[in-house]
Image (cartoon, rainbow, N blue to C red; front, side, top):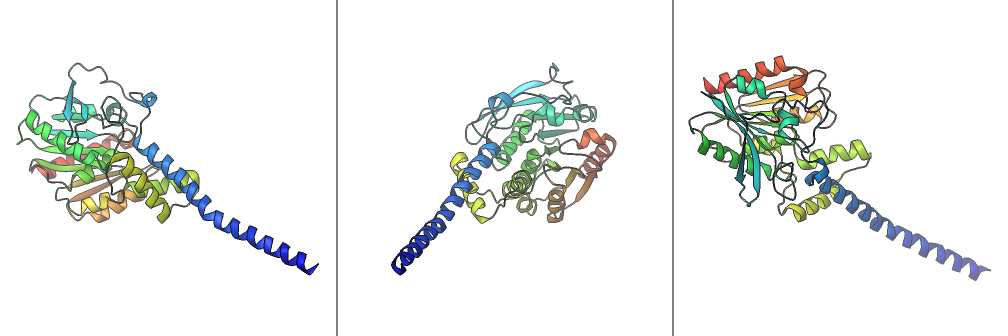
Length: 314
């Protein structure tokens, strides 16, 4: 009897030990699947989603004959397509970088008329891996910052390099232009408009994992997503942030965010704003959700943009 009890106890201990050993393996397997899904969703735009529009998209300029289709080769030899809307007697050029799964019309269709009537040349690129541009993946702002720099050079070859240039982004495009601001920019780049941008890829992955999956996102997930991202894009540094970039920015920045944004939390713009020690203004659009700030309050938005221009061109 005692011998059987000892055998049963030993058997239970072996089973318990095996179960305990299996838990970390299971946790790692689940984390690997999560990391794969997060990175794939972040850097891949399915073909079915390209060049599509929401019902509320302002498509007035979709077939505008005055908007020219142009192309540019990136530093890593990806061909990008852009939409160039020149303005006679232009006073400045605005480069508009759209967001994740966005487009030039989705993110900027509402504001094109205001910009053009304000005597701006407008360049509206299709981001790499999205819509009509080449590239098998997006960079989630980390690669697009270098594309934005190349578009600045393209503009300066197209028109006078004495003409002021502003880099303007929405959502991921906002993170892109903030990160671009830390690069070695031509002297005619005068200001940044950062509309609802996130702080870093890791920060927004953490926020959305907590919010949509109700799952924790700790050091293990950081390591796994970094590895997955590097394997997919060939670059590292998903902790690099708009905060890091803004500490090396020396041109004025207009920060914009909607008070009801539940995709990129408003607090991220507060963090970016606090990190920047240069000339700055923050505009919070009451009641606005994600990436609809101009549509929600065009009057306040236009006034803030005009203040930026006046400050930079004085």
